[in-house]
Image 1 (tube, rainbow, N blue to C red):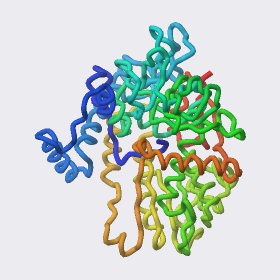
Image 2: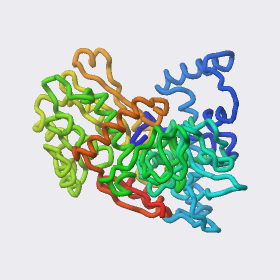
Image 3: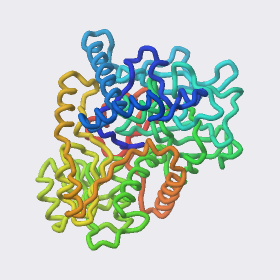
Image 4: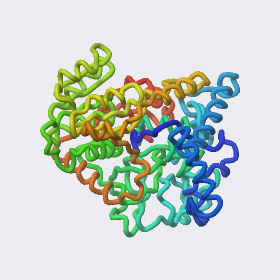
Length: 483
């Protein structure tokens, strides 16, 4: 979901031309086509052979490599058309002609900010249009040319779902990689055009009989894409009643970053209870961001000591101290690893790293015996500009070649572990999602954690919000208010 990083660049099958040709397997299956098992028959055997070849050459399956190739083509087309003046980069979205209240923000194809566009929702021939996640497949009809949008016949919704009037949604760095076509789950399960977004807050307009909610309930939660919208269809199991202590914007800021942080801590052995090992020191990279700010607070709540927060600018130090970090390292003004060694001379029980190539190898070396390196993103592998030009692609390729390889015998001898995850693939993990949501709600109610600091934007300012999150200078979360 949130930072939900990918192991390398990935993408779409086209530059926005012939939408049907790059619909996802999931969408086609939802329309009634029977999925074919990988490895069955000639096609499956060929796929297995291709995977073996590309795993040996690149460390990635053929499907992922194919997506990367098409991402390259689509982004280069976007860059060329903007450079030649055939497209213009807009920092505000062009309003819809009839100015409907119900709308979604869609990414037409991989590229820069110019690929954002509004898509009308509302009513169509007596039917209700809404966005939804890839895991909602029963009882809905996907709109041709917009795989994130569904048509609800007569306004009826599946029994287990709720239709939410979205008041706000958040911006995650993962959304930037979706815009570039570098987010594998978005390609596999949706395709392009795509309405991105994982977090939402709003009011239930309609509730299915088995959803657990009623019309009028104020809710927040997660969706597997589709949150950049004013009307969202989502399974009730992915929503919770909005905590009364949270404002609308704060409620939109919490779900995916909190879920990502809690899963990272679970992988590191800190949840559901603190480890019994002697060393309980943790280091959090990008600690002033959405996930980082949650990791700092949750680590403190779970007994980590010391909690060492790493930031890249002086203006972020105070925010991390306020979150409860025992030590804050500003790597722009001091050597990161020398300061880390002073803070935890015996190494760290866990290091949480979404940076990628810039810090992964050193993060692993900083682990103590029985330590865990948890990886959930690769920000330094990616450019900071809106458009990925040929030089940026070359730099990304070079960084990919420099990615560390972790040696199993060394991991055994040193007693260290490396974990990676992306919650956007976890749509079937109902029990896990429920347990995380319950724990997060409990901590919020007990004031053991609080929502990240929020910077609000209007719905037509999505390109501007992407620019801010790419800059690396933001603190906390960026939230889009729909009205």
